[in-house]
Amino acid sequence: MSPLTVVGIDRRGNSCYAVRVTESTGRPEVHSVVCYDDDHRPDDFLSDHDRVVLSVPDDLVQVKSLCVNHSDPIDIRARARFELAQSLLEPESEFLFDILITDESDQLLGLIYRYRRLEELQSEYGVNNFNGVSYLIRAAALGRGYLAYARQVPGELVALVDFDGRLASICLIYRRRIVGLAHLATGHPDHASDEELSRMAAEFRTVLNFKLASLANQGVSLPLSELLLSGAGTDNRFQDMLKSHFPTGVGRPELNTGYFGDKVTAGDVPLSNYLVALGLIVN
Image 1 (tube, rainbow, N blue to C red):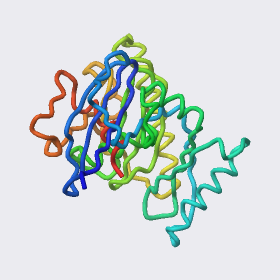
Image 2 (image 1 turned 120 degrees about the vertical axis):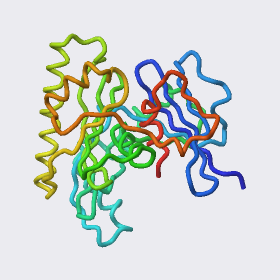
Image 3 (image 1 turned 90 degrees about the vertical axis):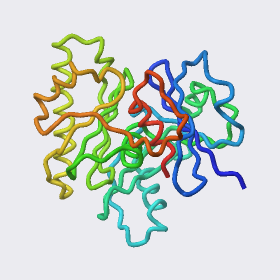
Image 4 (image 1 turned 90 degrees about the horizontal axis):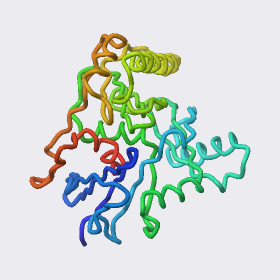
């Protein structure tokens, strides 16, 4: 039996960042990475037998904090789905539900996707004819990519921020688990003035402080260890601007190249730009 191949595709503006991964020995191996626009998708990159996972923009997904007892893991998803469905004013048949288990307590993150919008995304990604398509919110994929494929920075509480040219996906990691998701409308930092960058950095501090306060109410009261940036527009100018708001440290995620095949090359594109795409294929 041939190993399962999974393709993760993440859209950043007019470009798609895709990775192709197999798990033939229980350890994932990245066979290829490719960046393409809508008019120049490689014809041989996708196979009919591939499982495809697409990133979903954060502003198209409802994220809700849930408290569900973990004592019966078989029943967790059913109970979480019921609570998520009860929060909606529309028929639950119009939505796809998912959950993220955040830690050893009873706290979960519920994810609500609208089926109609997912179908539109399939068309935008150009994978209409694939049956095995699944989805994950960008912020969660960012966290999973970091945990599975990046070198871990010291400290228990880390914030990840990834820019796609329109939104910034934000993921909080506590003791190697995703504990918080957020996003912020930013535009492209490369095109911003110093004044606009300063305002953007202040907005980031406000959003992260709000999320940290929410975590403190759940018993996670540690200070932020480091802020890691990836994606479009994370040049030194913006990074320096953020350092005045986050004195504990601002850096960039470093991918572990041991997961990449010898012939894998990203060209001029930073490998960290594929972090979301990599996270899409993590179980």
